[in-house]
Length: 118
Ligand SMILES: Cc1cc2nc3c(=O)[nH]c(=O)nc-3n(C[C@H](O)[C@H](O)[C@H](O)COP(=O)(O)OP(=O)(O)OC[C@H]3O[C@@H](n4cnc5c(N)ncnc54)[C@H](O)[C@@H]3O)c2cc1C
Image (cartoon, rainbow, N blue to C red; front, side):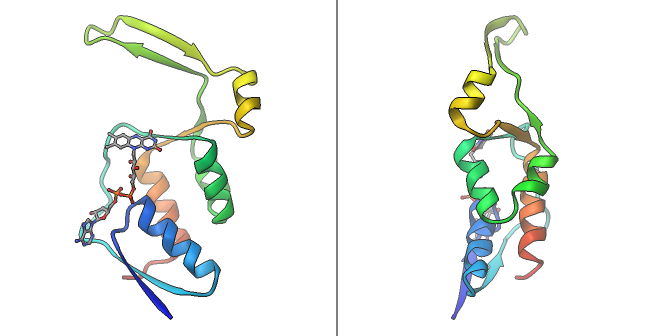
């Protein structure tokens, strides 16, 4: 069996890796020539960390991220509107420390894990 996946974003490539891990060949078709930055970064929370580790892509991706220490909300004049620390208690509750990656780093790591096909 061969799976054809349209779209090489996080979802498509993750699906391809998951299929390959159970022995199904997966080819990803992506319309874009290059991976582009969308937004400033990507917060990777507990469920995503667990999923990446299950795909065997967790360590390399997470090593390129950093631990989120706090969230800050600012208005358009850069004045702080609110601040929420991410404490050990919060990390304990989610079991895995939250990480923050540049989106293209995450997508590139997933593409490397899948191998260049399609
Ligand atoms: C500004 C912003 C910030 C975000 N921040 C976070 C965050 O911090 N944490 C978080 O968990 N989520 C965040 N998200 C949501 C997250 O980005 C999406 O849930 C995720 O990217 C969805 O992945 P996907 O692979 O399903 O879709 P996409 O990333 O949209 O990928 C779809 C891919 O399919 C390709 N494609 C489309 N049509 C075709 C076609 N006909 N043929 C070939 N290729 C095609 C596109 O070019 C694209 O590469 C954010 C989203 C945005 C917009």
